[in-house]
Length: 247
Length: 78
Image (cartoon, rainbow over all chains, first blue to last red; front, side):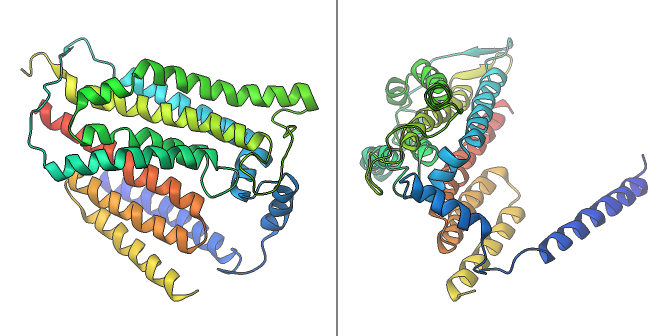
């Protein structure tokens, strides 16, 4: 195909997409308008299930099936990355050389100071997912990345000891499996997959909202483990794998 | 639309242009990280703290980190 033909094709397709976008935006409700049909339906449903964080109620209760799909996508991506980044036949693994490179003492200090704080914020975000903003996904990401402050603080060895990848792989599977098991338990107990059939507790309490808290914890375990496995593949390739003829 | 929304929206637009105009992927990872923070600020002013938290975790921490590690690996091969 010639350059002009390609440009012509792009102009036609790009013009159509742009026209559709403009039409779609013109049809949107006004910015900041007070008419929100979805809010009017979701907020009473969340209050009915004693979930003060409406977003968590939508993610883990009203549309928990969507979240199960998203967790499966995450699991599949992590498996894909693990397969793609495994050492190839012309690469070889070696022990990481620790202590190489310069590291500012202030960087080291900040890494060790923020490590416990970050991990605690991660745990709190997961545990309070049903009550305050956040939940399994956000807390899991904080936990999974927070542990890498150990690497930032200068020790790949310490990071390797603190986060055994084998355990994280197990956590990934257990988290995803626990989500499905809570769903099946709901089906057995109350007749519908992922139905919120646990005692709901009092509005705003830590132990409220029934299955929302359980599912938030399951997602937290899966996401934290998934992030650890994902970054471990990248770190392993960068720090410990070299091409044979490249040396 | 109040002043805070106008300010954060403008910052997001400026940040996005900065990301697009960064040539070197390693530098782009840093501008992308800053852009993620600006976007999280916009989400906060639009009363979406849950989305802001996800944005900070994924857009500011994980994605730039993966880009940096990939860039380092590619540089080592050359």
